[in-house]
Length: 289
Image 1 (spheres, helix red, strand yellow):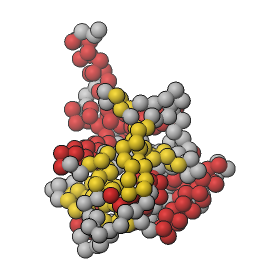
Image 2 (cartoon, helix red, strand yellow):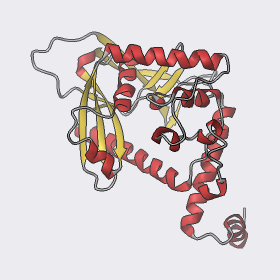
Image 3 (cartoon, one colour):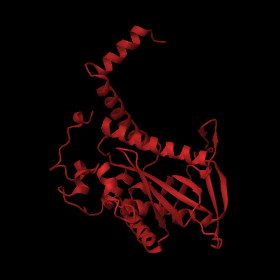
Image 4 (cartoon, helix red, strand yellow):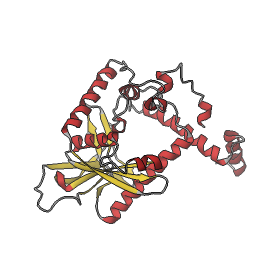
């Protein structure tokens, strides 16, 4: 065991003349790089992530093929952790309200290469009194023992059925936090951002649930709002076609054509921009800390 002096010397050697904020950012940036490495080592390459729906198909192929994305800065990692805190806070609140069925579901689809988790599953407080029962479905979550998620000898999650009944007795809630400007941009709309609706549609397809909510929180002042989303077969068919399109390229270890130019918004903030357009976007990774 290290002595206090040895521990302090170790910290000073690692972080040198950084202040505490810089130390926090450096640690989180290093953790982000390590997570990318672990993703490769654990065989999570080749998976399609529902959170990437609506993104450039070339971005999705880069992700599925395991190309190294731009490491996240410490500041960006803090933003992500705040988003995770929002999820956890709302899930705890829903549990205390008595509307929670499960904080998340394990979702797998071999053909579409999907291995993911949804957000909260709640009782459908929107259901009409005279609405007939929908199709009977089953929903599963991963078994936990003492807070540790259980897996079998092959590393697959051990599942338990947490709901069996009409699909219209339940809702999927997808949580999203938004910057002040983006949050207020939603105000006159009757729908959530399309990419968020698309993500929910993919969950409908995989679970049999037919209605859900995209639940937004303003990062600046914690104001909240939500939009109701219902099953849309046309959007789902479009999604499945797009996913299969990318999978065909991934299986050939090829990349789809670029969909944007470097000056476009979608390209400017893409994690793979330095790979896609290296001549226009040299990255100084030291500035990410």
